[in-house]
Length: 265
Image (cartoon, rainbow, N blue to C red; front, side, top):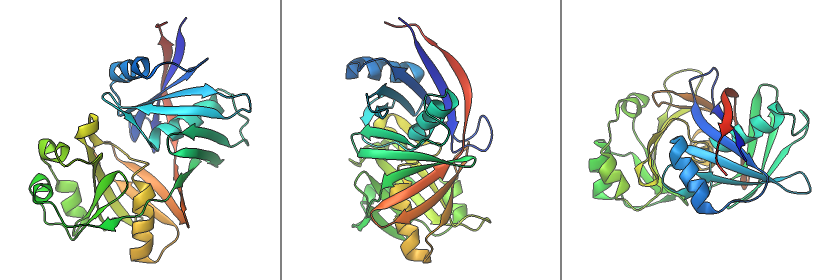
């Protein structure tokens, strides 16, 4: 038996930008070790596996080349994109995903795909000395989300110029490090980058799950309910973020760049 597999660029205005994710729809659940091996083979920041439930919703799991993760935005956008593109859902039908982070939704909004994700609080913490050395920059503030350190730096220029020590970041004991600053480039409100070497992703091109924390963080600082962020990785990507109480609506565009057969039983 073979499985169709798609590669989708998420948070992408055009192909070969944004964050690539693999999407594989399975007829039935598979063991974690098999999915992890496929994720390692695909060697993308995330490979998503979906299994349809009787009610039309889907079980969804995400694997980096090294680990299974509890929450992933770009591979969720990629998954919803495939379901609509392959007409497994009607174009006006919302996607519903059962995940390790609860029930997540995705809906179409013109060319955008909008995710309904949990909001994450950022709690101030003392800055670890290793973190400052890893970034090579002095933080304006240091906080911790449920998954990551969230570091505000002084400027967009500093964010774009970072060349962090990935070994030190991997030793910090968190999923990763989000760095962010107020944007100086229109029309964006903030810029960010994400480093996750402990999970096999040294720099993630565009990180949807990080916006669960960045949205509320910048909403509080800027007094805005509708935000536009830019993840300033080499590939780059635009993220529309709308915090709503305990949820965050995170939107991006997506394009399929590859469709093939996974020749595995």
